[in-house]
Image 1 (cartoon, helix red, strand yellow):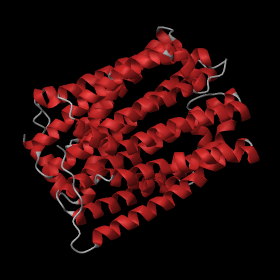
Image 2 (image 1 turned 30 degrees about the vertical axis):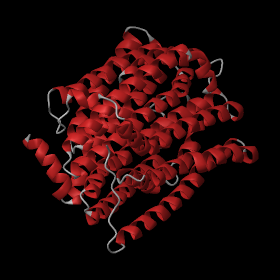
Image 3 (image 1 turned 60 degrees about the vertical axis):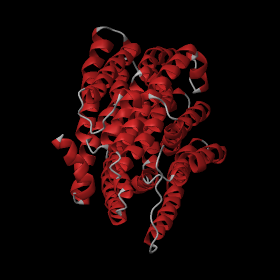
Image 4 (image 1 turned 90 degrees about the vertical axis):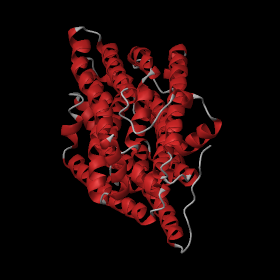
Length: 459
């Protein structure tokens, strides 16, 4: 109980810089660990099975992102509500929100797993699998879909744990699952000779262990939330607000999934199987280096939400400013590393010289504005934290849906495969500008004398 009280006290009183570091470092480690699921699978598959197998896992990746999107729809929406209720000292309502999120994500996980297993073949064709890639993608998806029952619960619940200010436990859950995955991958792929299916089995088992640890956090009463059995009754008002606040993250994840589907289908026309495999590697690199940015966002969201609920607007604004500067520093670091050593980093995934050569230019183009991309992510997360769903949704949609997907449809008609790569920095630039306008207007609104921030109680 003393540690729980300290977590809540820190959200309200600890200096912004040290508090952001305290929350962001373990959160980032946990997110990096989470992203390692696909990276580790891809490395072992690339080295142990081959280039077409990498492409097969790349075809499945958008499906996994949709599952993550559903987990974030529930988890981040609930986390925003929980943090603001904690800021209002309304512990019972915060617990009720958490219990509703547990029920909702469990039901969704079971339904999605069943649907994917029933319609595996047509789903893979829609997602861009060629005849050569299809067998590998089917082997991977037919196993990984079993984990869709419990993996979304682990991801969703991690957001709630961070909402209480307990980023360390969230990190432990992700690290536990990832380390186990790294241990099991070579056993299932090489020792047991299961290939792509072995990588999937290793991931599912690891995710189940993380899921069980997340449940134990509440069963062992380590949470600040006084969860009771009657709170598990689904409430329409809670689910509606949860969904509206989490919809921004859902849109961001789903639009990224649709983007990958479109890129894979475009590459099938303009580049072929090797180009799809190269893009699969690039996406995993990008997903990994963006995790520190999302770690900072996830760390600052409970800070913003709690203090917005407590009416401490000065602390809200300072939290945003410090987090933006942090993402710029982190983004610049990874930008320099990837620009300097693209071949060496791509070579970690495969020794295929053709794949490595094809991936260098696209990787550099995709990260061209990476030092500033964290600003856009912070903006969407900020509006989500203060309970403003509409601007959060618009900003979350801006990069992929409003700008990048149309550009990918148009530019290749003129520039061929190069148009796909050029579309990324253009979309980044436009979305950054839009985020700046939204944040400027909201900060000016907060500066108006006598204007209290809106706050919605959930019944």
